[in-house]
Image (cartoon, rainbow, N blue to C red):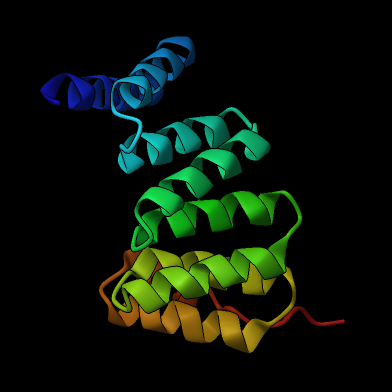
Length: 153
């Protein structure tokens, strides 16, 4: 069991250092040793997102969620990948689920706010950034203080 966490943690370190081939190997070993290790699937999904393979990242986030249905971060991460794939409505559903699991998860509000901005729902975006700011998120406060407003025609 400890070895599984070591592979997962080392995989995270490799991702942070940009050593992606070793990161992938470590995350894969972690899930082979412990097939119900939701965090390793989530982390491998982050890896796949970083290299632009959003289909694989969605697969891994979905597996993490299946193993741990209350995994708010995995819902948020999958939402990010779905948004990049051009599926903002599905992304918003995932952000909503993350927020329903953890109403104090500022990251989900920020990501949903970004998606709302991208699809032109400016008031929704502002509300999400306000909520994130009220939860202590600097990113949420920065978004609010940046003069967030609908573009002028």
